[in-house]
Every structure is written in C-alpha cells, then in structure tokens.
Amino acid sequence: ALLLVIAVTILVMSYVPVVREKTQGSLRYLLLFALALAPLLLAGWLLESGQAALNSPLIVAMVAAAFAILLAGFPFYIWVYPIVADAPFLVPGLIFGLAQTGTIILIFSLLHANPWLQENSQFQNWLVWSGTGTVLVATLLVFTAAKWRFLWGHLLMLNMGMSLLTLTMPLQAAGNVAILFHLTRFISLLFAGIALS
Image (cartoon, rainbow, N blue to C red; front, side):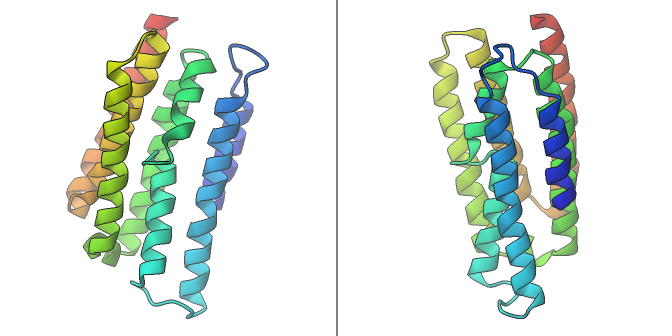
C-alpha cells in the first residue's frame, strides 16, 4: 500500500493540467489515494496486534472503504471527473488505465491472501452498494452531458463503478474479469485520447 501511494505521488508529478492554475484533479487523486492508505494500515495493525478479530465488522468496513476509495466507488468517485476535465487527452489513459491496473493487482493480491473477505456478506454488501451508487450517479450524469469531456469523464466513471462490482464475483473469475476490464479500459482511453487530440 505504501508503494502504491509513492507510485501515485510520482505519477501526479507527471500530470500537467491544460490550464496551469487548475490542480483540482491531481490534488484529489493524491489525497484520496493517501486517504485509502490509512484504513489499510490501521486494519493491518489491529489484526497483527490482536486488538480485532479477522472478520470483525470494523476490519471489514475499513478494507471495503479503502477498496471503494481506490476504485472510485460511491461516494469516493469525486477524483475521477476533475482529472478528465483539466488533463491533456492522453493522461487519463495513463492514470485510469495503467495506474488502475496496478491498483487492481494490489487489491487482488490482498484478496488472495485473505480469502475470508470474499466470503464475508458485509464486505460483499459494502462493495455492491458502493459500486451500484457510482454506476447510478454516472448514468445520470452521462444522460445530462453537454460537452465531450463531461461525457467522456462520466462514461469512465460508469466503467469504474462496474469494475468495482466485479469484486463481488467468485475470486478467480473476478480476477480475470477485472484485469481484462482494466486492460481494455487502457486501450480504449488511449485510442480516445489520440482521437480527441
């Protein structure tokens, strides 16, 4: 998790907004990824120190919240559109394609190390509500889109909400579908960025 935040910090340094004064997208991106680190580290500390049981509601809620932040689940999707709104057209492919592929690999390594999470109904419910919330908000925003960037940003948010819902599938199938989701997203964003450029 620490390496992920360091990687995101380096990635934000390469982010040059279209309008120099706008840094809203990159700051939200960095702050929310740093915020996601806190519940992961706290959950690990509580487990290792014996202060919480493996499947306690507190641990499950913290891990689910961290996953929702990293994958733009509801209500943590607020970092997605600002990046698309003020970044050059090819930057979203890097951030939402390659960087998010690294994020989903980290998440699945945690799920493989802790298979009890996938079997926990509270964890499943958190992810379903969070992913469904992002999908519903993004669908509403897509239908009210008046500009290309607005449409592009909220179609991307819709895709991210659906990729969060893949975590509720059986672990092996979820891994294959989520990796495919992220790789096709990278290729799509790359082509769209080239076309819009």
